Image (cartoon, rainbow over all chains, first blue to last red; front, top):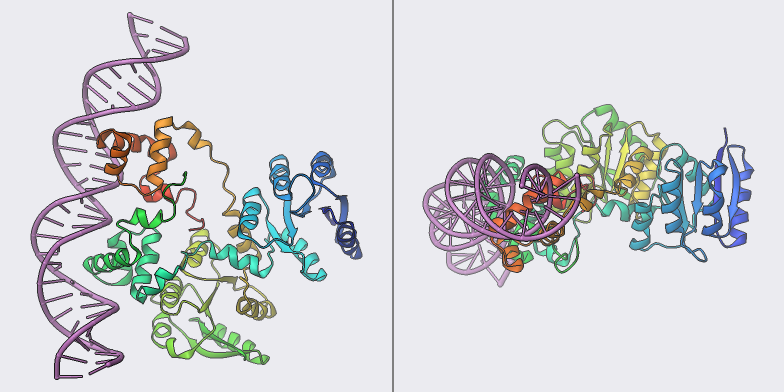
Length: 209
Length: 209
DNA sequence: TTGGCAATCGCATGATAATGTGATTAATCA
DNA sequence: TGATTAATCACATTATCATGCGATTGCCAA
């Protein structure tokens, strides 16, 4: 009945501290503590952990690679990163590797425990700034160039980037298709592109797919 | 000093209820309440709202389109969707339209208030099941489709993704434009897409921009 | 030898996008 | 008041994309 959790964290104080926090109540039990990725990977299998907390900066293999491997081996396991790192690269690599949660280490202890429960109950707990970065990944980047677009042009850009056809955009905005074309022209001029694909591909030229 | 919030919600009880919740403490004030998108759009400008709560299922124009328009007009405004809808389409359309939060209507009142504060303080509050869907959007089943492309098809794919036109690709590869078209067809077939837009968004229907 | 596949190419057609050119109206600012 | 800009719209044309259908040649495996 209690949530079975494992901790992979090299700093002993942190590891033991979190384990102690878990055991305070009776809805979490700490089934294992590992100081490095390699031993976790070796021994995690038979433990039937529901949830693992993974530090990223481990000695030897990184926590992200560990997450990827554990997820591949035990697809239903829930992984939450617990880390100091707030950079985009590690955040998104972790999510892609299979992490369902991402909590920064400065999170208060009660929040950490409630995050584990939230994860177990179908949520994806993230520290606030992480969640903001994740959500912003869905939004078209606001570059300085975009600040020279008019309001209407920004609306057009948004719909263009979502793949709507001119006719569809016209219907949605209650204007004629020629109006859409006029706005698209201005957007392309201001953003120095010549086609929708160039717009979507900005920054991708000379890079592999 | 207090967070200035506006509510766009057609059901009066809900609208007034949330406004009353906001005014209970002294760190939130409700600067406006609107029952439909059109009047919100008309009058939101001068209100200097920090945060708007937007229902999706409004009479007339949808809350998602409203979010897009408000974001285009006031890029720094923070938008949180407050809705019964949990379907992928609306979730991701909302995020792409500029929403930074997405809370389901069955959320307890205290959580709703804390979510607004979290949003204002740089987070992206989401109901747990929503957050899970958002995170899972980064976790595509590793698509081995690309492994069934021939070497030539992979070259074509790369150039397509970089936004080059067929003619440009033909010149680059020293083949005719019809050859490019032939390869493109095969690429689209194998990757189960019907257009370059779909290709560029592949597996990204609900994916980051 | 035959069949399958990859690479190449062509013609035709319809849909959509992009471009050229022009115009009107309203709002704002010097 | 005049100039500028934004939003809107139109007509015309060209360019590009996507699809249907067909073909040839070379290579490789059964």
